[in-house]
Length: 233
Image 1 (cartoon, helix red, strand yellow):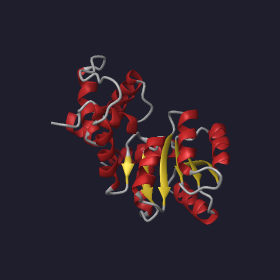
Image 2: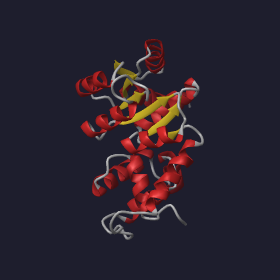
Image 3: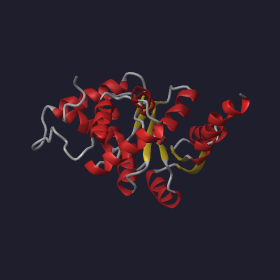
């Protein structure tokens, strides 16, 4: 019984150790505290940066899986940093960690490619859980902000550019089914439980769907799915 119970914990520990994180914030005490929390939780902090330019250089050298980015940075904004990070490496996940919960800031970050948005009033546990969820491909938002983002996507979907392929014929039935669930902001774990699949299988289906649709991350996928009307029903 003891060995069986220890295995999942061991896998989680290895997953944390394999997650490479960069912290971008211009306040040294806050940046160091965030990096320390991540390291103490077993994640691999591969770089820290105080400016956007420094973040882009260090990201190119260290290839983090997740970049934790503040919005208020000198010379380059966090939104600009997010856009450039994702442009340079579409596989990187950006978690914005900001003091602001303003609508315009949230939407600008998401449109730039952020996978998650957390306000700095979040607890240490909430922050660490968000980093791990974002690294796994889930979109994570401070409570209340997810509805705002989905509402904006739905508003944009009412004024689509060009024709929309509602049949999505190039996806398999399973990929289409998972896409419908992604459109409703279900997490990978929730999808896996509902469809009786492994978490990894769901991730693989989502990655295949992203590749087929030529999208870069889950936020883009949610927007695409909503444009297709897959969040209804």
